[in-house]
Length: 530
Image 1 (spheres, rainbow, N blue to C red):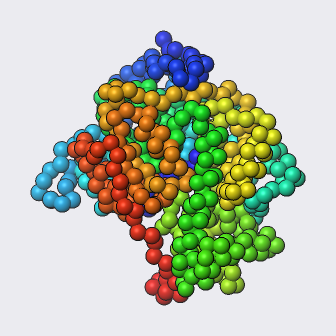
Image 2 (tube, rainbow, N blue to C red):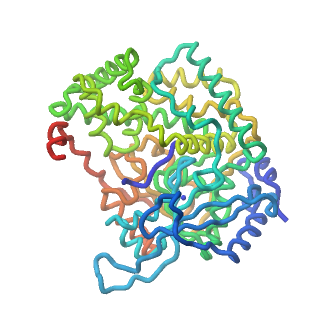
Image 3 (cartoon, rainbow, N blue to C red):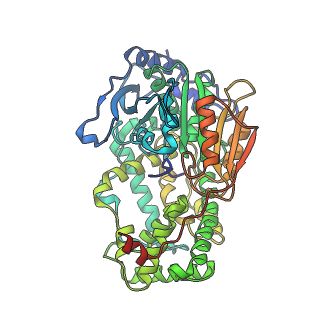
């Protein structure tokens, strides 16, 4: 389950007690005494916020600080790691009434998902019009979770080996290609173990939830106000299950399915199915704008244009670096965010007309970002592999995904290769916690979901809603952007503001009409405008 970003531009019981417990009966208090000790220390110490270092390259009024958390909550006095935290203080301003001073409501902590995404830039959203009311009332707080960026970063391979292009992207791979990818997955799993050692097992979702409680205490908050996007909704739901009395308000944006039986192997199968539908949405939009892009007047015709580009790139990579894998990656990103549709259509159109430069600019690996990208991939791999059992026989993966690729070829095998190191993982696997709260155990929470979200299929939001008693689900109909808080939908943002600023929620379920599709832009017109 890949990361969402915030709409453009968070005496110990042994850990084994929790991991050995049945999925339906894992004790909510497991590991809590270690967390309580760490949280008490953090509350006493606080966070010494100051100017962000030049190396962190974080602009504006952003302040940075550190909070220490135990590597292993079963040994809270053992090795500590530092999480880097960022903050912009509440402005106390009402953007609609300059004379009104807005009372501060505390800190709003955000996680953008991943696993492996950094949240350090989140507080800067307070500069955006959609966030100014929330930024008036809350200190906006972001952070790098354990293993990410500036928080005890993980690595599984040399960054220079991470970006390899051009690369193939077979929708129906040969047996020889499968053997090659199995060998690469085994190598990556070994690299994670060798580079991190025995600490590797402690990078998981349960510890992310525990770290969140320590961060809450370090911020001086008795109860947590939290917003998680994508994967951030999963460990946010773990937090709600483990520490319900510590919750003030929680927003789950693009909720993933927390069913223990789905974490994470089956969730990824569901994701591949959903991306096929989203790929169809994109092709239909391109076809509807055929007068602009000339890629075909039907979804099938657009598919033909895309496949012609794949074949050409396989014979001769664009710019020496963009092959079928890079083209597929660029269009996969457009499955997350429909505001990327015009740039992808423009680049494909130009390439097929003989101009490869827009595609090269769009899809070439950014070598300067290799270290950051490798780190994000390492955390993603470690957390998902540690969180739950995975099939350890490639024949299971091969069977399930060969069947799936017959009906959903766009993303299926790419998703396999991203997760296959989990088949050969050497660190202990956990049994996922049964996310569930009863009536009155948890304050009302808000779940936001786009009906056609591919990265977090809508069934996950329904399951999250079912499991968190007193939650409210707001659905953006006929839309598929991954993460809808603070986006272009005023109805969605109205529900978000009402909840965070007033604690006010609609009835158990509410719906918003989808936001408008992006406008097609003719490449010549765009060039002239520049």
